[in-house]
Amino acid sequence: MKHFLLLAVCLAAVFLGACSTESQLPVATGEASVRAINTIPTSPSFSFLIQERLIGAVEYKTASEPARYDDIDYTFSFEVLLPGDPPRITRVASQVLAVEADRDYTFVISGPIAAPVITVWEGDDRAWDGSETVFETRFGHTAASLGDVDVYFDAATTPPTLGPVLGTLAFGEVLPAADFETGDYILTITAAGDPTNVYFESTPVNISARISAIISVFEGDANDLSPWSVRLFNQNAGGAGVLVDPRFLPTLRLFHASMDFGAADVYFDDPLTAPVLEDHAFGDITDDLDVPAGTLPLTYTTADNIGSILIDAERAIPAIARTHLYVVRNSLGDDVLVDHFPDRRSIETRARLSIIHTATSHAAVDIYFVPRVLPIDETRELSEDALPLIRGLALSSDPRQFPMVAGSFDIFVTVLGDKTVLAGPIPLDTSLGDVIDMIIYENVDPNVVDLAFIPVP
Image 1: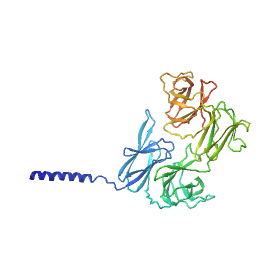
Image 2 (image 1 turned 90 degrees about the vertical axis):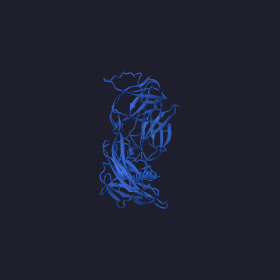
Image 3 (image 1 turned 60 degrees about the horizontal axis):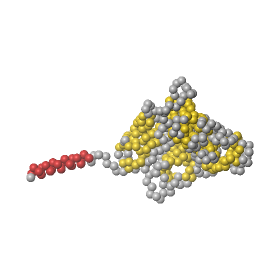
Image 4 (image 1 turned 45 degrees about the horizontal axis):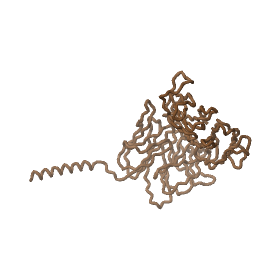
């Protein structure tokens, strides 16, 4: 019996020793909030990870949704698809962080895509009790090509007036969180020390009580109306908003893509006074036309005949976007307006190409991109084993954009599900960073379509 007792005591000691070892592992006492912001204008989407688990994808000028984690040590990483043969997902940056309870962490990625820099903005994770009448916000600087700036955030008045400067920021910096009573505010960003040199001045913005926000300035890209873009990120629930600088108007670009519609005059007013555009003919494409935000009356009349109305419509013009508007004949034989919001941002790791189909002779088409064989042969035929890159591009559907590698190609447009060629071979040379737009037009011969490049405005 004594031997059994001794064995039991030894086993208990072993178990206690094991428990003692486990007790030295990290023990969480609370949680913190974590997100990432992408500040690289020409970057593709980054994957933001904690350890080896995905938190979210981060496009330029966006933030990942806030995620909460225990207060222990983690390795946070960024991965991206880099060009190559084949393209490869590459981990380009990692950051070890000892997470503290009740804190808020924002990982800001900047610099070159293949070797970025990570800056971590830290603050308190605000807890709201439900009775507050204020919101809190931090102001950041994430526009790499912009110099030092002063930030003003003033109650909206007419005319706008600058109060005291909240602070001066260099790229990568963020101001401490500050509380503001709910109401309408105007954000003004100027050159540091020079309030007359205004980079950005917003329309009045209203933030609800008990919201924690980050407001940061980015470099504008080809989709933006102004040289600088400002985004507001909700730290509590995620989501983002775009602040508008009213000095820069939205734009509208008009496409005439209906062969039987005839030449038209286009009016942006009601009642009609003077046309904005005269003799708008089949195949014509305008530059970007400045238009006011809000509801815009649109009237197409027969050229030089104000009483012959062809289309009478309205369009809601967003204050923050560029809009494309196509006159297209649909499958029912009606001439209609098709809206599209183009994505013109250049991404340095790939080419981007979009095509809209407007030829009513075919309800849908297939499109092939075949590597070019030199010397160029304009009589080249589509091989039987070729596969379409775009299947079933439908008439007047939203232009479909897809990534392309750099290279030289011949494009063929064919009958849906058939290799009967409607257009091609049409040569296309692509380089990384290219943004290419194309349009398929009707031809007088129903067995032919015309594929044309859309010029950059």
